[in-house]
Image 1: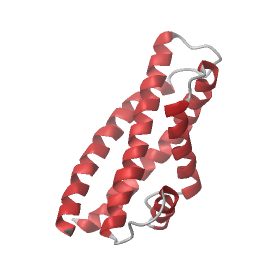
Image 2 (image 1 turned 135 degrees about the vertical axis):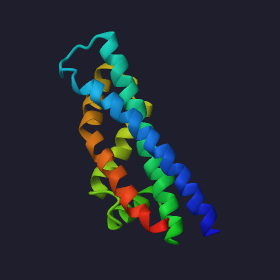
Image 3 (image 1 turned 30 degrees about the vertical axis):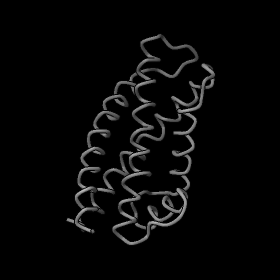
Image 4 (image 1 turned 90 degrees about the vertical axis):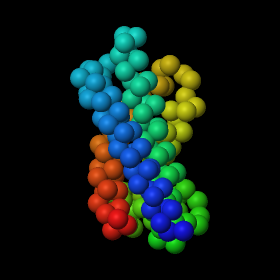
Length: 147
């Protein structure tokens, strides 16, 4: 059973790496866009790409990677908040509170329709991307013990 989970973890880590690469590309593109009140259609398209990729990577980490690590550690019970708290204890993330914020931001991305409010979402995503990138590095370091 454990070997199946380890194999699945390897697959999910590969997906995480690709999702990180895509997010890093969008993040770099958006870093050169000056923060302002009105954006061009092209700039908004870059931000849309950034937010979608941010949401996917955060979901992959929380819903797949953290869950698989918990299962390998025989701790797969509880809520998303429990999973985030365990990730902090395992040093997969630097702060549970910040990852709860990331989870809420991911939900805002999925449910925000007001064009004026979405600008603040874009800014928040840019601010939280480095935390996701850091967590990816931490996950890789932690997962070495399974292989």
